[in-house]
Length: 348
Ligand code: NAD
Ligand code: TYD
Image (tube, rainbow, N blue to C red):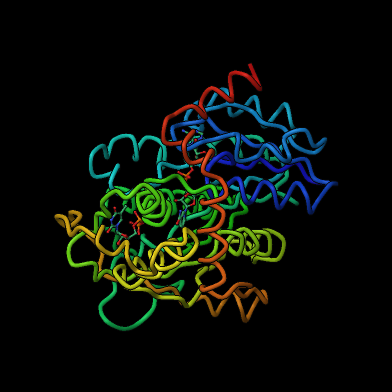
């Protein structure tokens, strides 16, 4: 029996993780704590919302007083912390809200966990979900390992790096049992269409321009979101206390090449001439401080805990494109903001 507080469970990765935990571990109680920003959508969890081992609580992670009452009310013994502002372009527009949520929010959760668990840390775990972007940018070769020096460039990655440091500081200073994972770019269903892949799928469907930053030469390492959720499950149960694990797919793509694969797949599924939507590609001004290349070495996770990605990229792209085509209503509701009505109706 465990009482796990998952923060940010109504977001993209969080909703996949909550679904996995609720279905796989009926003996655990999963408490999903989310404030439901524009990126939080409870419709992502419709299929499990009535399960007995699942509870949703609307709460801002920065609200320390309320967070403390939630630890108390649900006798929380583990935290898997995903809640964050997560989009780099938004962080360039408004760095303050990233520092507030990602740094101060993480600090408030750490403080609540420490206070609630301090008399007995046994069986407790604070699992912090982070990103490979804290390591900065690679040149043409090499990989990020768990010992790569932090070198964040965007306000988003700087705020995530700072939150990672606070988590380690709580372990070193107060003995808090922690684990951290740093994952590469995720793709899959339920991703908010501001991120590259769902944005481009939606724009191709609607014959809208595809804004490629710079020359499209930046490289990202893409992992299917369900494989990230599986990795979190493995690290949560088997990870060594105090350790860091890198999660990635050994699956690097130059943006422009990835975009062409997406275009081809959407065109085929819409019975358009394959590649005909390439005419929508529009090169636009590069993102400020745009990291050139991310690549994760996840061999520690494979060698020590036996995790590997389950899906080949081609299969992942097929599944992902098909999901967005089959769930146009989800996309329409998300892009129009209608999904925010769902909370009011369902949870009042
Ligand atoms: P997302 O933006 O889709 O979801 C974030 C969730 O956090 C939303 O449900 C939102 O409502 C919630 N939230 C935001 N501020 C909150 C607050 N103050 N209090 C409570 N809830 C709040 O993000 P995502 O892509 O699912 O990312 C989840 C986590 O994984 C983040 O910590 C991110 O840094 C990390 N990560 C993401 C990726 C990726 O490719 N998306 C890769 C590696 C790591
Ligand atoms: P994104 O999905 O925002 O993830 P991240 O910045 O965290 O890696 O972007 C992935 C890549 O795609 C990144 O190199 C920026 C680029 N990009 C575009 O070229 N155009 C776009 O409209 C977006 C959103 C991203």
